[in-house]
Length: 163
Ligand SMILES: [Zn+2]
Image (cartoon, rainbow, N blue to C red; front, side):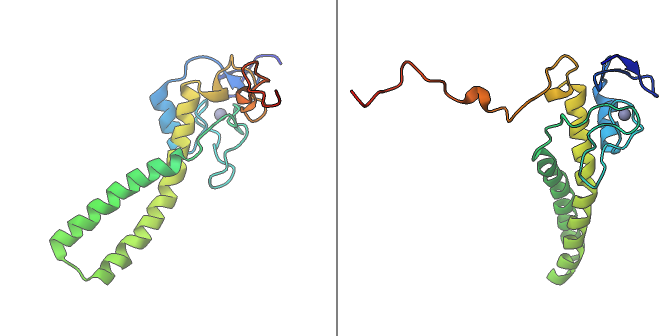
């Protein structure tokens, strides 16, 4: 495939942009649910479903391995906000427990749903900026499950119980 220059000036090679990948601005783009390469295309095609390629510049985004890191960081962030607020309100007003339940349960759900895609976007942008997984332009296309290399070959040291 030929190199091409995308609409935003990003040079592409086989669906992967080349050139500088500034970490901080990529993080901001990802947190805003935008493609880390061009900052314009939407990273998600549904709520948490990452687009295979950026709809604006064509950057391949399917290489990400966000896995369970976004929920993990979301729990850390939302937990610190909500627990801090719970303690502050309890110290200031000492409201009955039903007020706590009425305040913090919906806030926790809403914050989680708002924060999760931004955290996922930022993590994918970080993987892109650091050339992790398949985001490296020089990387071979990832094939299979990745477990093939760990399957044991027929080993000369294998015990043979037949003798
Ligand atoms: Zn893009």
